[in-house]
Length: 136
Image (cartoon, rainbow, N blue to C red; front, side, top):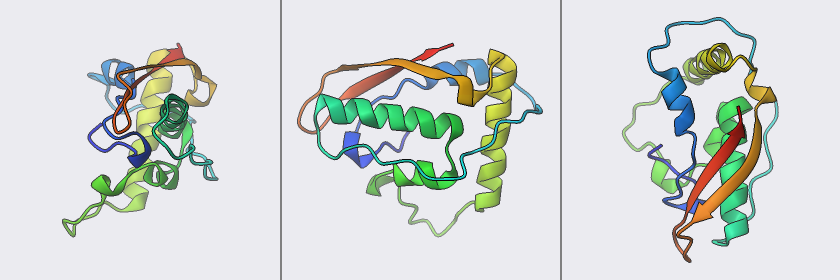
């Protein structure tokens, strides 16, 4: 992910496991839907607890969140100043397809995937890395 939350700049959230599962997937069918509400934002700050909360929030937004949930977690570095945007309906369609592919590959609906733990390292006052471990 190029855009990371302002709360945890340069934090690495371990969603890369999903990219591995997604390789070579075509179109699929599934029932996973984005959330209808928004999530609470993680606490502000640069502590390990803030980094862990941000990683968990990103994981949840990725698995079941709405476009607004994901957008709320993005920092100013993710702002699109190019004048080109993708319609929200297209992004929602993409998210549904991605989640349906996850469901097909993992044999489990994304809303049934649990975060087991978050491992952090190299946490400083301005940066840190977090790896989300899922119950797959």
